[in-house]
Image 1 (spheres, one colour):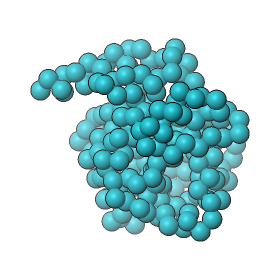
Image 2: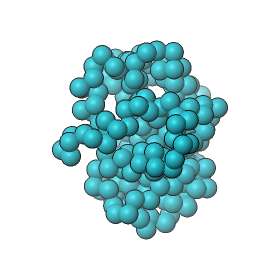
Image 3: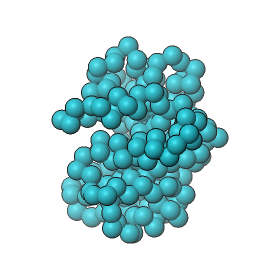
Amino acid sequence: MTPGLLAIIPAAGKSRRMGQPKLLLDIAGQSVIARVLGTLKQAGVSRTLVVVRPGDEDLIREVRQAGGEVVIPPTDPEEMRQSVECALRYVRDAGPKSGAYAGWMLVPADHPTLNPLVVQELISAWSHGSQQIAVPVFDGRRGHPTIFAWDLVEEVLSLPADQGLNQLLRSKPDCVLEVCIPDSRILDDLDTPEDLQRLRLSFKKRSAE
């Protein structure tokens, strides 16, 4: 397991482009969120926080059944960054235990093609490197997930209101370790019905191989 690293999954979006709650959709026999949580567990991540909108009982139930730790903000987060901040404060304000973490991993909730081997490779590269941030790269494009050193938490919380987490990567280029990953799935996301159809077909093809 990786006790010095926790994962944060912002899952408070409203799936407007999908037209239905996308994290509960079935892909190859599992909900999207259960698949993401299962992959992180396989990769050795011992604690995963999932930020969920107040009142989203179906998702809360699914997250808990899949082994995730639910974090519920007092009001609906308008942006992903607000969900991340909520989770970071939740851990930081818990007291001395927060000092046990060397870093945290930002994992998109709608990333069902997340590969445990990719997560392990990214963690290993970050653990053995000197940079504060590690991001996977395929064909010159940055993908998911991203690892941040725990000592960047206060900088995240201090970012101007109109800036996202990407600003941290842009402002600290020398602190970013790009890890080349020979897997285009690090670029995948799930936003539209067309994305869902494509990913379901991809899983079906892999299961038939």
